[in-house]
Length: 346
Image (tube, rainbow, N blue to C red; front, side, top):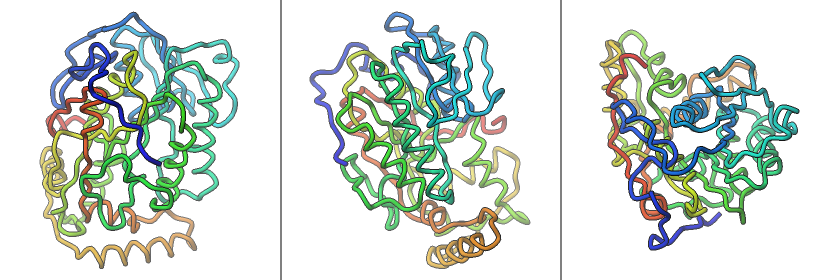
């Protein structure tokens, strides 16, 4: 799907610096406090029980807005002043939401699992997006998508939004997230594509790397030399805020940190800050891909989640960098550099 780019000369008020409705904080620094550019608004955040959705809901609430947090599991999110409702997509909205008229919806709910069977991934990611769009047609919709929609089989180098094409995705997660974007074609939605979101509250990405350290050794495809444009949660929150500014141009936007870093260096710093003794052991990418394929076959028979997949091996072992021109020009996005400051307490 071709990205819908916006002209920079029609930039709406207040988007010359990051923050938007959410205020903003550079990675490694505490939030600067509420910086409301518009009246307080009502925002529904789906997937608030997860890492990204929860972070969005908290930042919005702390910025003085009325927030409704939609979760799949009761008790998975709690924040002062935030109303929480249980909504298991793609079911219709629960009664508690049927009379709600939010000004905006941040749709962060998703089945984030590259080994998930097709049917549940399609149900959560595609039908879930359709249900949200249908339930609140008058609200500004911001979809948290993923850089996985690009064809990462050979690596991704300075990818622009239009480089994501039908059929280029690998695995049920990437394919269904691309189809979720297609659901919003022709609307005034804003689609954000972060890559490898990390930071305070991350329970998946970097913690999974820490668990992979065995006997003080961490096997990394390609030795971790590949460049990656990671996305600190604070940068993603700033992008969400800019997307919520009234008049922000509809379209699709890559969202990452300011510049790529060697992925092994980032992982090494994270482990060091966490006090994990480690030594990175390079593994040829071809060998890692083969091992991932074998693990996937084995998991088919054992019904256990494989520790390594071809997708994961390619994600680590190949370059993944993204062009940010559209976000900079259309939204006024000004990301901070990659930062692992404070990782000791994540």
